[in-house]
Image 1 (tube, rainbow, N blue to C red):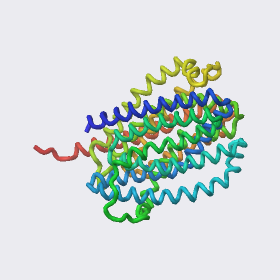
Image 2: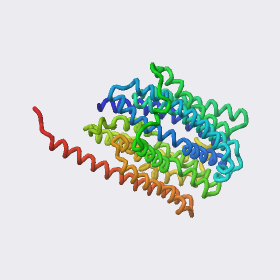
Image 3: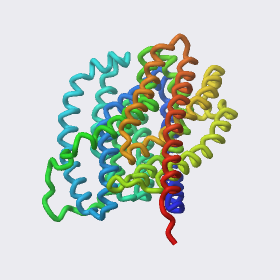
Image 4: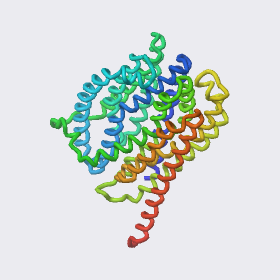
Length: 420
């Protein structure tokens, strides 16, 4: 089990971070072809994309957990039939929802302080693509097709750069970047379609939605928590600060959150590895989370030091210049995002154990980040300290609850009879 965990983690780590490197190339290309204000708007629209894609995150998390249980029970054919049914329902829902949201584009543009309705509408349509095509992820994760996920992630990043360069060539830099983000997800579908069998029997169209309400509560809270700590700051800062300051924040946090994205593949392993079978506490559950935190900490610690030391170089690679204030902000941000980076590794384990109460408490605490940004906004540096303080609070909460589970496991093994 230990070798399997580390092998899967390393495979996803290498390929997904190669894709992440290509995504930073994409961001650098956009940063050099957009004004700071437009670059801030682009990342605010990516934050909007995160909100519109929350249904995908919820469905992905819900079905990863549910389908992992079915796969463990040997019901893989049923999982594939459910996936085809879910795709049919999602296509209809995306078509209706995107049509309604396009009509609300002027109100969304007002909130983001922009007159670029084309960019807003492009974001809405891109979200529909991401939701529809991103539903491949839960099936691949439940089936533990980690090699397929890694390949699709790398191929999607290459496609994103290609479409983005085409947009620059055509003179539609901002809209081209948003289109590239949506269409690049299609590579995941192309990789997966050959692996999934057509259902031998007619699938029930609405069966994917026929789950008890409790099956959705946990994923909803986990998705909102993840968005609060990793995505909401771009939208809030865009609203409460001037466009130039919001653009500087976007550039700095893009580099600061590099560590979050670097270790994110580990969290994909945690959920299926900690899924309970018929409510039974598997003995490897606490060890999986400990290994994830150890692995994440071993990567994050030297990464933060390197980013702080080479902050001017990192900014020059991204934007072509290294402003003194930006270097100062980046060094602060690098240390402030450490706890947020590690928090994302523990959240999936709460889902696997069905600990909805803990998830609810974590969601309430994570909402302090956007609230803190609104309350403490006299200076941009306060925004970075709010990120760090909220992250420390969340990490302390997660570690205390993880320690409680480890103690329970130790007591359980001590009380169990020893067999010869």
